Image (cartoon, rainbow, N blue to C red; front, side, top):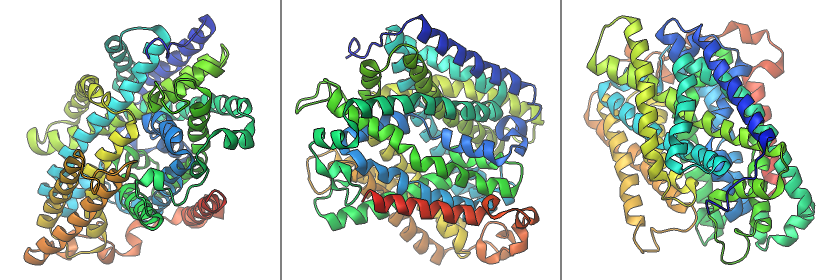
Length: 549
């Protein structure tokens, strides 16, 4: 498959890619001048406007999951993949902006694990910080592996050489400019990614004869409908499939990822005001609704146009769909734009993982438990060192991701382990003041253990737990969520909660509305206010679900 993936690039394509890298490194160098403290390096000095953080919010998610993982799902499941966007993303993003960002931003914490420490104490904080840091190294490996595949396909270099080269490129601009470099590059990368995927989608749809032609050539009728999504969920019952997708993906995995994942929340925390922070995920939700047309449709087109993917006995993996389609459809010049777009995508994803990792490892682990009360410059230097170490580790975790034919299987498994129980702890702790510090850490551990045990059982041949599609990840996440809630309720009934005065700003019932008030938003027109924007967003995503049901 290495030779099959080789792209017939010319000097024009190489020039376009080289120009892109000049801009990337230039942004990193320019951002370096504004880094004078650890807050500048880790949170951009909390001074960015909402349109910048909103585009960065969605671009940080436009990594391997979106481009390779979702196009691979497009090959296998077609429009059922839309659930990851319309059910599994947008509602949670709106909830984050309206309900949760006032707590995150208003409490002035520097990370999601730090919020956990102030709400539950050091036990839950340490569990969350360590599990988050581990997850980011594993997920960064996915983005790095797929970034290396592009370099391998373009230049024909061995994969390990491509891994090292790709790692050095990402490392350079994050180490120079910290989060600001990552965010401004993510804004650039958003437009480059769209410029790469839009021509590929249009040319592909034209080649298959448009929508009607695609429907004629894709034999599976269910791949043109989102519901009940039995292929994606793995359930043979339509009712169970709808429940699994709605609760397992739409609630547990989705809310767990979008509302507690510091990779995303960090972008909103870098905003210039609480109003800008609340609007950040909602601004990102509007393009999020339409991105699947640029990643799922190419996967469906590839399944009928690419010889290695067509037929009953494909010789290529679904992960290779986008590269193979680029190879077959794009002329030189457009090929260079597409290569730059994929490089931008994977760098955005990896940079987001690394920038979130270095914040948590510096503030939440090193400063909190290892070396306390040093000058700020010390932690700034440590953050840069952590960036280098994380990138080196990601080279090795990339090799783990090679064992999965569809990276979505790998990533959804990780989200079930780490994000689902974290969301359970957050949502219970934010709305129930009786939840205790002991319940915080014990719930997290129990939820993660439940997901890991179910996943281990699914490796066997028992059809009850070894579900096809991505149903195993949905069930594992649901079990993690339920186990966390049950353990938290039981432990809270036997242990002592914090006094109310220590929970102000962290629990809704004891926090007065004036605590997070933002007088500036009331004077803005409706289309610049958080709640009306969020309601418009939800109305649009409901409409899309109805149209393509």
